[in-house]
Length: 520
Image (tube, rainbow, N blue to C red; front, top):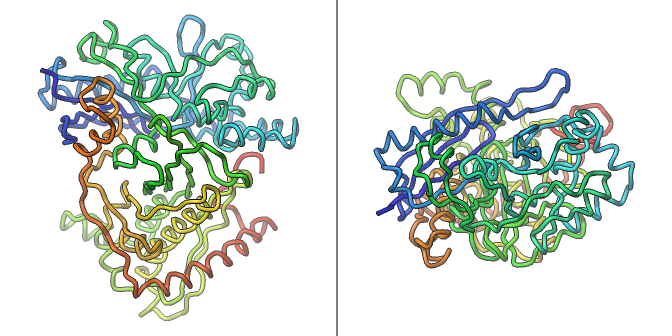
């Protein structure tokens, strides 16, 4: 009897195959790193090598079956998830002919073309799709049209990476709405394509495949897919979804008004809503959730995890060396030192990412400010804690931003991802946002979300709520410390005034933006 569920996850930096028991226990995981190379002809490009990367995905599937000793017949179902925004183009014979990964940045000129075409068009597209040009597929398709006309002429279908994994496994191509909605060419309300948007932008409207709702069983592993991966021919394959949406399922955020924060290289604040209405001021992203009938307001914070890595590698060589001697994590040692610094860091603050502004999305130059030349107070652990606090201030800002757009805010937060491994950071998030923070036990939340959908698709769970009840487990809950609330309220108010001043310096070209959206 089949007892296991498999998720195949195509992330930005790696692909992995993860196997779970039906109770949510992770049984095995095999991961392979991959690289998206820049084409030297086009700065900012990030090509996706579908031939080599499919080989890596197959190696992961075969590897996890071998390492766990699980027979292919014991896999009840497979589903897939991936980085969002990456796209692939196929010809009429079903061959991949062009692909770019999620942070491909070659299409700045095309963003300018779109803005010049009709200044009000971006707002119109946002109201229907919840997306702007900043991350969507429209500028990238225009880039292909302008720079690779022979590829554009041969294009018959567009797809996302999670759908590509299923296509390779089964020979069937369909797009699901959670990731498909990130293209900016899909209607939030109908969760289906809006080909008229493509036409308005001077693009073809005949390249959009069928849409299959997340969690739908619609294909089986083909003979070719079985030969390449080691899975059993005929294994059910269920439509998955985008990484953040399936991460939300993997931490139990499957009902309206629940919220999750995923803390990694970038931080995402996801708020579930039963209405897919866009923000009137076009500030936050709105995506289809992988749960039919739900949508998500999404606010993105740029690079908190990368800032942490920069600080560790640039200033914490002693902790790195001690960790190497003792087998501990350098971040644990850094957290211990920062734990002795009082909340508020003696009034010092830093600026990295700003709260999201989807139509005018830019971030100030990285800055530490308001510190004194007193090493007993302002040492590396104070600066480190300031980074932790700044990211928590961002979360508070995004809660308030989404409340303005949606009219609601969560009673508690679910905190997952690499950052949630830090008890200090988790407590700071609770203190700054003044609400309980629940940390799940699962380390592969996105993959677990895919496995849950796979199990629902083949009837192993009677409902999604029951699947979550059986599979999602909790590590601990952090309660806000009321003694710290006044300190962080003051810190937050000052940060909201400080950041625009720092951003003005970038606008005057006196400092460099941490990041700025294409076309701005």
